[in-house]
Length: 378
Image (cartoon, rainbow, N blue to C red; front, side):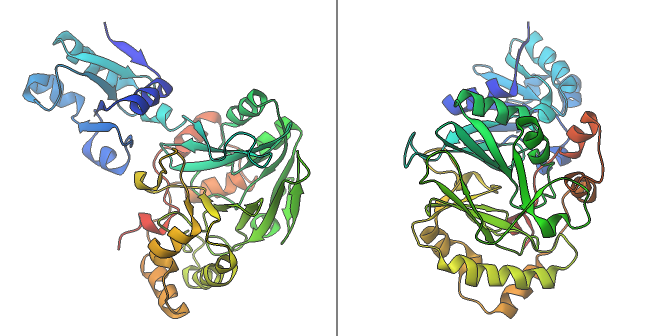
């Protein structure tokens, strides 16, 4: 009998031990997007090949280990799992396939509990490479760059004995649907985003301003709004207690936000250059950069979160090396690439201009994120 596991159970297995994952989707779909984890031992063999040739034709499939089988939505993997099970393989079918994996979240603490009266949690959505944050102080919380599965954040806040007071977006996201407006409404909280990102939108929001401070929980805790345009003209980063920079898609551990998504690669590249050279250059070396996406597993720390002290980013991130504005802009323009799938529709949703069904929401978000320059060729 084939045993089924949820994406959460798959992740728990990956966290503990090396795990063989057999992806039975087509080669192109696999190459485009698949489960990534330091303990994932990936195989890609289609169900049709298993039916035609038998699993014995593929000695890379172990007979002495459990094999987790995954497909797009859970149907093809069931058939493949049954084929393997009948031949005596130890099989685990991943329910819901990659679509379900794309909707799985977990969280990791960045700070130690009660450090500076702050608990800073990084919420990781591994399939999308998306990172969001919950800041807890006393019985109050702030959420930054929430994904669309707002119930996850509500439950997390409740587990921490906190009430969400503010929900912030660093920018108008282009690769995934923001959960910010819905979460704010659900929690009776205030939703904040740069007004320039929402110009012409009828959505209800509060406009962020330069230097704006959010105090919550303990009186010493502050979240400072800093305009960091470039990925989008209205991108904002949040400095927390002068120790942590929630940098949105402006700067990543090993990349930088794409300035070409608005069709103004040269103009926005110039903004990004000024952000890198003027705004971010004033940050102390020991500030921890916490981005809204990760591009590679190497960006995870030994503590399990994605981030790095700014001194390391200055020395290792190619976009922080000395170069002229012209050279920087040329490099950005040359690396302009394919926009994220469903870019226009997702931006419309995040601006409140289109209300999709839940099925549409799931389908729109399938696939990896492409908001970092590191994702582009060259």
